[in-house]
Image (cartoon, rainbow, N blue to C red; front, side):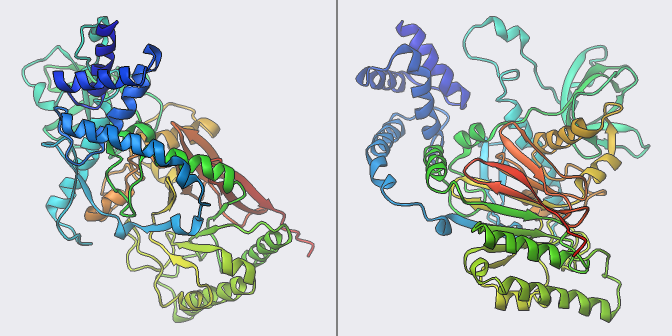
Length: 541
């Protein structure tokens, strides 16, 4: 029995890349005995300790007994203090943050330490050749380190019959001189100078021969995305592909159990235990709290202001005041970047009119946070992602009239207690489809939407495209990451509205506000899900 228990303890810590010495193993067995933990509960109990140990800044690969004892005492203290914290009512105001892309700290993946390291260099919007290379390497290594933890890729230290079924990743440099052998590679899909499709990793690239590939795995494969490619290396120096798939996605809880101590958003980190407590209390105390999301709020469209007025009236009549209203651009239905002075003046006047409309609803103005996210046609200092907020000269009247107005970048994030909501305004579906290099035939409707969401989350990036297709500011490419997986992602798109949940992450598109009806989405933090909001246009009025 003791041997089986020891194997379980070793297995759990091995999952987090830690090894146990005899003293640490003995200490953990004593803890299990002290609390009289049943054999069925051993793995869960050790998992709790391993997760907390992994969050310690000074945690080494070889488990330190001193740190282990400190973690155990901290868990004991948490258990004793839970009742005291529950007595205080939750204050949503003190736990709501709008996180601008340009305020997020940059965390690099360190190959040497096997974890994230905070960049100590000042970030620049111009970037350098090194920063552009580093952005691509960070994407590759973040995906790779989560793959290597996957049960199909991670070998156990204990003898097992499953070892023969494990898949081993190889590098392009290991192909040389080994024609006729089969390999599995992880790399970026790109085109060489001759226009041939290749897969490229940090060691080199190899040309792909897709003639024997029946169908790739589910998802959209674009120029610039990372893919798992399996095939036979030929005498001609090409890889004859027999299978292609998206990298497996790691769920939020697993990633945060390992990197919970890393403050990716720069607003303070919370533990999984705190997140679980917040989630329970939000369901109990804030079940009637909602966020509204609107996209393509064309202020130059004759129906937009009537739709907004109707939405605000509906909120007042039903005493349903949202905590946050996010308005995504474009705030004009046509580009005015090359327009006349009169076009630009109308653009500003429309924002002034919006400020007056919001201010006329005092109850909403007092209680609701308004977040404005620019779209592709809006005037900002740069259209390269991440996109700067709306120019202050156009929105000064909103600032003066609406005290809780936030002018955010595109993308931006909402941090609400332990939840992270990513908001991105981009024509993602059209751009991804235009640049696919392989997709299952005749994919439409629900399958196509699922493929899009799966590809975005599997790639851990909002725009898994080559820089020539979607330029990004290299030093701020980390603001487009989706790792750890967020709680929700708002893919505000011209494409039809949809919602679905993939690997625990809820993804939805509110669709254009003005259409055959006034359409938007409501998000409930208590349920971590969205619903469609529709108001009739009442054209007879």
